[in-house]
Length: 134
Image (cartoon, rainbow, N blue to C red; front, side):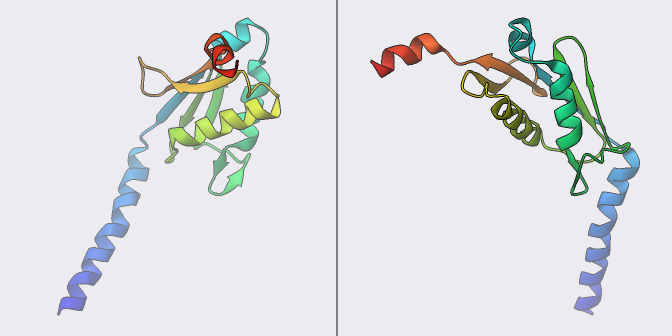
């Protein structure tokens, strides 16, 4: 009789994700690139293209389908996802882009203090770093 009860529990666990898919809770993450774009270090269009090509959905890069959308305005890129996607993954891809364009040494990706779903690209404080090296 006990094995029959565990079978019921397993079937209930399997049903939970299906309910989530039906509700389609949209997550939205923003990467604020205001500072590097103003200094013409970074191109928003190429960053948006990079994210579109690299974000993996269902283990396949570039096949965003309807689950994920990448859009940009003048100074920021917004990634909206209906499927589960971690904010950390967006940070990883942003760092990868910065490294590819050889600006990883000057820029860092920081979570915004104001909004939890926003990453900001900021410069390292070079003035502080210079004193430590001497």
